[in-house]
Amino acid sequence: MKLSKLLNNIEYKVIRGNSDININAIQYDSRKIQYGDAFFCIEGFVVDGHDYIKAAIEKGAKVIIVQRNVEISEDVTVILVKNSRKTLAIAAGNYYDNPSEKLNVIGITGTNGKTTSTFMIKSILEKCGYKVGLIGTIANYIGNEKLKSERTTPECLELQELFKNMVDNGVTHCVMEVSSHSLDLYRVYGVKFKESIFTNLTQDHLDFHKTFENYFNAKLKLFLASEVSVINIDDSYGKQIKNIAHNEIITYSIDEESDLKAYDLNLHSRGIEFKINYKNKAEVINLSIPGKYNVYNALGCIVAALNEGATIESIKEGLKSITVPGRCEIVTLNHNLGYDVIIDYAHTPDGLEKILKSVKEFTTGRLISVFGCGGDRDSVKRPIMGEIGAILSDIAIITSDNPRTEDPFKIIEDIKKGIKSDNYIVIENRREAIKEAMKMAKKNDIIVIAGKGHEDYQVLKNKTIHFDEREVIEDIIKELY
Image 1: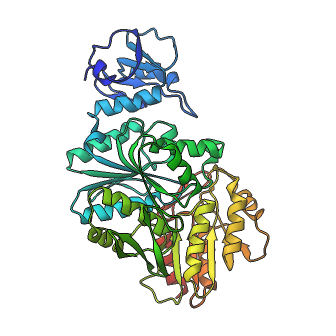
Image 2: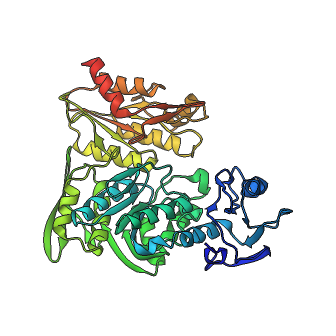
């Protein structure tokens, strides 16, 4: 590809060489450079791509794209841009022939509900006969083909390649989680979003964003770049987005008046039933996963699906059969223990509160929770989660999540600072904590194990170990029964 074509719609200055040369491929990781590639120097939080220019040239890079003046003595083309992250995002789209323009891309953002919502929409659209791609935390999908996911939203170069693969494989719709990190770091910059869904906004990622205002403004970017905004109007930040965004806006709710409102909610341990009015007719929607917050997730998905031409029948079928790994997932359905165990990815104060409140509504015995907090992450939320876990549980077991490089007992001490009651115990080893919860469980009790959900690993100080809570629970059942 001609360098000039790669840099289409990008403001740049040629420092050396010319823009008429051909480039082989584009890279932002110097280790992946091959002869004839263009190397984008990205300033990261740990490393700076400008420090790897020499290494990139030694591996064969013929074009270096920088965002500040640097000394380069080698005979290569040097391009100066204002923001190399933005430039990489646009160039990646150009390189793969702007595949997002050939897809119906539906973006979902919010603190909680992104993953569940992507699976809901995928299920509904597939009932309509569409081939659907999915990009998210658990995995990426091209139709039924499952691909490993490295992060919630891929870096822009990998994202555009994934879009291209979807287009080449006949995908018509792509539903994707859009993280606040990806918005702030321009991973989705230039992507054409047909629709965007706002789920909710509560405290998270302040280790990265520093202030809640920054966090909100990062999320807001998605709705300023979309054709249609689907907004949860029961959330105060949803109301703000509605007042700021200038595209087509469709609202949903349970409490406030909106374009699509749920009513007559009937929660039970195996799911939830609710009604909506559609074309002046009451329609009953059955969800196969429990929890009031999943009604919100479903409403946003119903709106988006209707915009894509889905019938109410396909929506009902898609939601009735939905399963989401690690999201309010009952893992003891095949056992007659007298109690149930639910695993959930909830790792924020709001996420923990939502899952515990929802489960409490249909628990006839005691609610036992098992949770911790991740290391090397926002420490402000730890005492808040401790308070929530103790207040909403009959018994709370505080344990490790992914301690990473932090002392797990220091994390637990931070959690304990928010607890004002004595209905908790501390068991640092997560497997032992789960086992203790199952040993103490009685008939009609429900155990909620929060924090890891779909993850099948645990990150410790110097290693990552295999840790799949479904397997752990099955092993404990064999030990105890």
